[in-house]
Figure 1 (tube, one colour):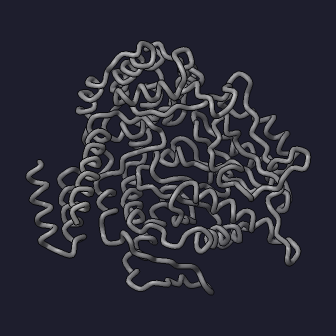
Figure 2 (tube, helix red, strand yellow):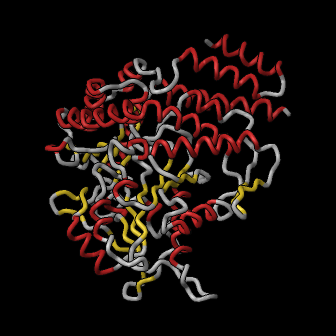
Figure 3 (spheres, helix red, strand yellow):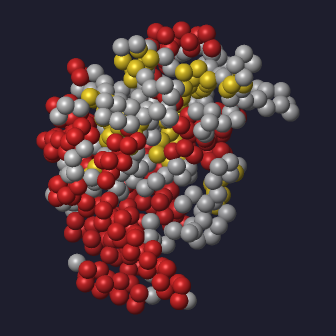
Length: 479
């Protein structure tokens, strides 16, 4: 007991220190992160945490294998409906607990789908997959070393998985060379095409590819998938893959989409769709194929976050896109090299990429920025010799947009970053002082209403009223 009495308080002291730094003293510019609203965070403390709600469709009915699930069943149905509203789609599978799991479910389902006509007793892997090269922005989960592992046939000529990478333009390595892409498509006939990146500043040529394969036979036509993990919260304002011809959209729900850490797969494969069997394979690979318990506390948070997103979608997306372009311009004005085409604003997403090789290694500079409260991540650029080399810094504006920053507010941030990167100055106190101006979250309910709902949820989450009442008193003392 003595060790417990000392060890746990020590852990919580460190938790508190980290909370205060991340939420009040630093400016978070990592494009794969966001802070969910207090309401979403509170959901993760409520009773569904630790519960189970396994279910699957059997003979046309959804069968649950645990009792006490009526509430969470309704939450899941409402979350599916809210996500379908957000994407303008017909089907949503939200049991993946990460974007990578969502991708793996899609890969498993597609592999099962292409085996629909295989001889009995045989099962093969995907003959060929077209994807973005890792060194040129492709996401790790869409590589053979990631979630695509074991789902692609080996090319006898190379001894490696038969993946064909999207070609890029010589004068802009961040954009796909569409004519060359279509030529590769005709030559290799991939069974799966995976759009989407982790270094992501331009739209993907979904419509051009979908139109090109429209006349192909059912057996020739590839499944078209778009991993929107980074840009899920910009769906519609940035790109609408399902409306452009994609069959599946996957993503994580905690980057530009400001929810809890989960994943999602969506489609328009209704019962009348010729690809309906593929969607049934997606559902079966979600459960029992990839998950058992699918983290019900974050599922409740996903419902709340999606309702928030639907309410503020246009306003939030417009501000994120405007902020990214403004931030890129401010960085360039401060003397830094910003990737992308300056004639079109450098970026079409929330991301801004900076080339820092004139000042040192990207990893070292990212650490220097972090020590000054400017949190980014280092990044290999498309012309680096491998993804292990980092000439770049990858940034994103979505979290600070939600905390109230607009276009002009990113100018001081750009200036402080330039001073750290180019002159190795210390700006840690300036950063903390500047961040103190942006502590109120927008695109959610007003503060007073949020506080009332959060307080009631927390009070009801504890079996002991004494515990809840004492916790409330302690919080009041801190405030």
